[in-house]
Each structure stands twice: as C-alpha cells, then as structure tokens.
Length: 247
Ligand SMILES: C[S@@+](CC[C@H](N)C(=O)[O-])C[C@H]1O[C@@H](n2cnc3c(N)ncnc32)[C@H](O)[C@@H]1O
Image (cartoon, rainbow, N blue to C red; front, top):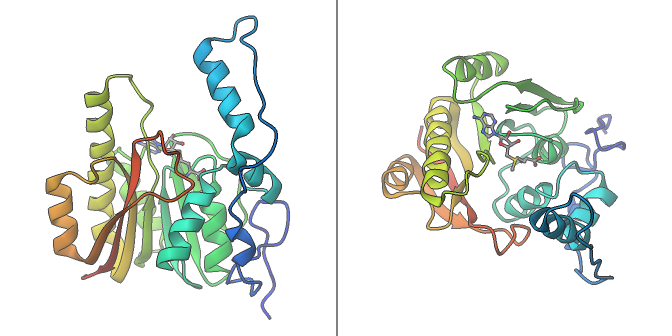
C-alpha cells in the first residue's frame, strides 16, 4: 500500500488515495445538541451576535472541528463528490477561492499521492501537505498563467470554484460580482480541462445565468444545479456541476 500523506488535518489522510476509504467523512451531523444563546454584550453588534450564535449551534462547524477540517465548507465538497465522484484517485485539481483550505484538504485526501491539488486565494493560507497554494487575485491577468505553470503544462481533471466576493449588501452588485467570478472561472476551466473533466462552481440561486449556462451546456455532457445539504438553507448559494467536458 502506498504511504499515506497528511492533509493538514493533523492526521493521516483517509481518502481513496490513501487506501483508507472515505466513508467516515460522510457523517452528516445529527444537528442535535444544546442550543447556545449568545447575549449581545459590549461592542458586539446584533448581526455579529447572530453570526456567533449560528456558528456555535451549527453541527457542521462542530463536525469540521472534530474531523480537522479548516472550514464547514469542506462538507459541501464531500457531499458533492459523494454524489458525482469527480475527485478520482490520481486526479489533477485546481481549487479557485481556496482559503482557508477545507476543499483542498478534501481534494488532497481523495486524489491521493498520484494526484495534484493547486489552490489559489486572495487570502493567505497555512500550508496543506500535498497541495500547492498561492495567494493571488484570480481575476488578474497573471493568475491563469501561473496556475497553468503549476500544472506543469499538463491539463486538469477538475476545476472547482467556491469563490465569493465579500458582500456589499446591494444584492444586484453582489450578483454581478459572483457571476463575473463564475464566468472567469469557466473561461479558465475550458482552457485547462482534459476531456471528460469536471467543473464545479458556486453561483447564486437562480443558478448560472443564461449565457454561462448556454456555454456550459455546449461544452459539457451534463450540467446540473445542486445545493448540497451543508449549504445553509438561508444562503442564496448553489453549485453548478458540469460533467463530461467535451474537450
Ligand atoms: C467561501 S470561501 C472558500 C472556502 C473554501 N472552499 C474552503 O473550503 O475553505 C470563498 C473564498 O473566495 C476567495 N476569493 C474571492 N474572490 C477571489 C479572487 N478574485 N481571487 C481569489 N480568491 C477569491 C475569498 O478570499 C474567500 O476565501
């Protein structure tokens, strides 16, 4: 058996590549437990009190901590991959908007030692053994070229984008920003994906807009909108899953 590698979760990876099977990651938190109430105190605003209360009562936050994932978002990718099986052993993965690194941890686990994982984010990230992480704005002209160089000139099997610009509070502006990120991610994906590759990208409810959806349907055999159970029901986010890149 190949030697397991750590995925930055403080323990050996248990993914397909490590030969350990990944079912243990499937655990859906029960959601039962004490409800923690937080008082608005001192300088804490009502909205930050609500955020703190939600974090403290969120079973995915607790489960992420328990399993050593850096974000509750890790469960969204675990659930998407359990359904679509894109993170195959040996796959080459690019993760756009990777910080703090939950999706990269999942990807490293699942693609194993023969795979490759590259993550990019505006924010700094602590290293994840088995992943190449860069701090850079993906929307700059230089970013796609740098990512291609990190792929050693080869193609990718999976492009993931969980990128989200910080909310302005103006819903139309926020929508335009996320669509711009999704379209740029798609432009990159169609440049680097190998035949049969997959593209998973966060968009807002209502899904990918007409133009992007049209292009995805042209370039991929199968295009779906999916809201994984770990995505908060009060969040407008949804993922477009495009499978079977036609090349
Ligand atoms: C929801 S978080 C990603 C969480 C991540 N999937 C995980 O599991 O830890 C969205 C990320 O997108 C990043 N982001 C937004 N715009 C970006 C851009 N132009 N270039 C790179 N990263 C960007 C943000 O900095 C943020 O860290």
